[in-house]
Length: 140
Image 1 (cartoon, rainbow, N blue to C red):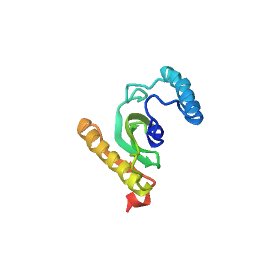
Image 2 (image 1 turned 180 degrees about the horizontal axis):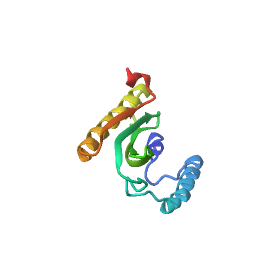
Image 3 (image 1 turned 120 degrees about the horizontal axis):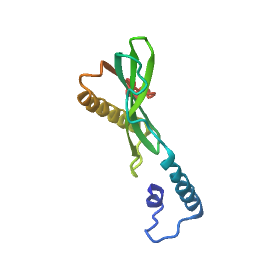
């Protein structure tokens, strides 16, 4: 959709060949989403009581999109380690072009907000957390 807007096409215009082929490919791939399954239980593979639970949040960005994803990392009393997906947030870059460092900062902001939200929701469960990024600008 963003490329359609960038090219100035209106709602009733026929898509150019390259966009039409990408659209058809996307429509074919979307059928596979019905077969995708995610476990809803965060700690289904835990054997015994848990020793610690941490939240790990990863952020990244590209010229096209940016976002963050959160996972629990847990250790039981037998020192067995597991992880589970919690949630993610992503955005498409605005039409007004922003620099990659700026998009990385926005992605890291989303990660920080995600961490703040999850620490409130799971306040008695999470023993700590780590925000991960590959951006030197954000790390500084």
